Image (cartoon, rainbow, N blue to C red; front, side, top):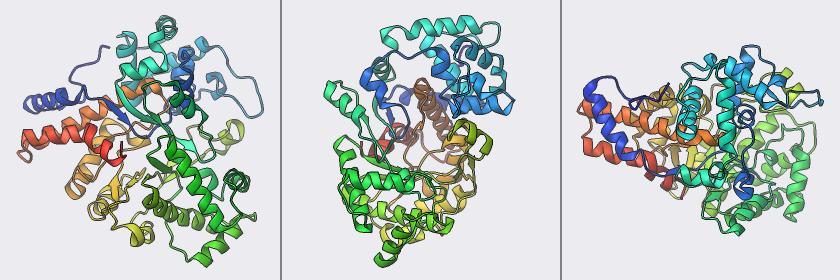
Length: 466
């Protein structure tokens, strides 16, 4: 099962040779991870990771959604239930279930990431299966107990130059403060994620807004609410934040006058809130956040287009974020126009667009980013951060938006050990694409080397102001 040195590179010999040269030049560059979901507590406390199942299976939506699709009960994977029903707590038994179903991941990026981690981190070159499940489990468990497998040591081993977490607007950032106070050299920065105080469709929205206003000593008015966001953003910036992130159901934006915005704010604080008002409020807040980014310099990211918690049975039993989020068609041309009419031509704003709707790449996103100075295209996300997803992205966007209206790669993961594997995959996929351009005589090889370096390091550093 040893990783092939030419994995993901072109099969045609001459093109593969070009891709090898490009990849060899960028393979060792430091990792910049500007958008992800690792836990800042890991870096603050630097405690050993627990057993292999807790590290690889229980927190990974890519893993347990696939197992669920084949009838494996989430309770048997140790996923806690809302009603306190007993779930499996024996990590070895959970690992055996995972191993017994490993064949389900054939052809998926999950297999690439996992086997990369097994070989590079633990020296394991055999394919996981039921017969060797216990032996591989024990090899990993023994390694996790060693100091060199603690979070800070892995940060250095992975050669991470900076990593961003994603943090709620109401988060006190205590773990980030502890990291900074410790004097450790690692750069772990927060990202401002205000969804909980921006989305009136949430059942806890009103309570969250009240907490926000109280925390910032702001009045319960539209103006006070906006000022509270400014206060919180400043708090995040003081802890190193360079970006915000917005996970809305759609990309819709709005440009209400002040009187209409005040009236809307008053309505969404009085339940029940209509779906139309909830959508309009989210839309207005994207525009307001863009204005604030012009004020304070935070880069803005929009991650729209997911029907979250599509499976009500899982939602009721296990709560949100159980792998039941499904991509939906997303409009960007009309949806973003109110915002772009206000700030689209301002090069001081960086607005990074992500999508789960690949049909929008060539029709909407690349033309938009290829025109508006404020727009950049985020890398393939979630279901599409894969070799084929990266290839499709480059094929559908490069001719219109070029390379320099994109922002390189980010891993968007909470699976810490998969970070090097994901970045390696992206570097290989990008070098394969560039090698084809060189082989087709559309790009000189020295230019391809410059682009490969930019996609790996320069573009992400500039876009996220790192």
